Length: 358
Image (cartoon, rainbow, N blue to C red; front, side, top):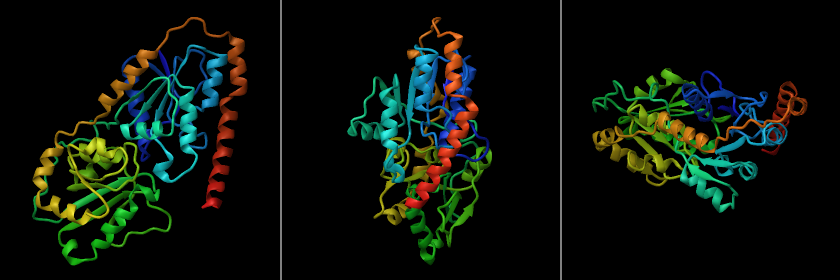
């Protein structure tokens, strides 16, 4: 079986979507499944569309390319669509329509939380088959090995990390904490570190700022802290909070998006009105939340096995692939170099247009 995953894999610090592709690719390869990232081979069985927005740097397969491949090259190829994005997440106005169009032509749609599944169902999304598969991170990297609880002789060290710098990632919450640190009663008890990218023209005053990290460097940085916080709004799943929990940190999470599905039995929920109160509650009852978090088990192995189960369930071996002329015609229309050039031009135009609109 050969699976085409429609995203590039980047090394170093990148977003959660990149880590998902990397983990799934490794799992498929271990299970004797061939993996490609472009539709430039005639014997692809499954097309997994993870980023259909061709203006995205990570995208390698668009809906147009997938449908044309199915029409000209292999009519039995199956399309699987993973939905991990929505307009509500970053205050955009085009993502939902794009995702719904892709799912309309997909054989199977996978949502990363019940929250985002319900959101799209409320928008009247059309799917042939669907399921919810919760996300997970690599426990070879993110784990609580050698993680010790806060010893209460020092300040309680709070941390969060984000690759994306959209304001909805929780920067109103992180700014609030930054301001609280100006008061002696708060700064005597707490310390706050932000790892990652920040919005343009934004700066912390009292917060420790660390450039983006990835892999073991990120895991070790997280483990050097005591408490993880996420204020990310309308987050479908959020790898950041998963990585924090797996590293042994209790998670203080905002009641928004799909994150409560991951943290409801492990972390402590807050809203904008009771954040300071909840921080002090954790300060007093830290050991309880530290112990409760130890059973957090959203890992990439379980996640990848569930994706592989979906792939196997719809896989349809076929010997009646179209002839070489049809594949040549497809490559003529969807030449990799030409498509890459078009993607680049579209991405630059899209960036400039959105910059003007803002």
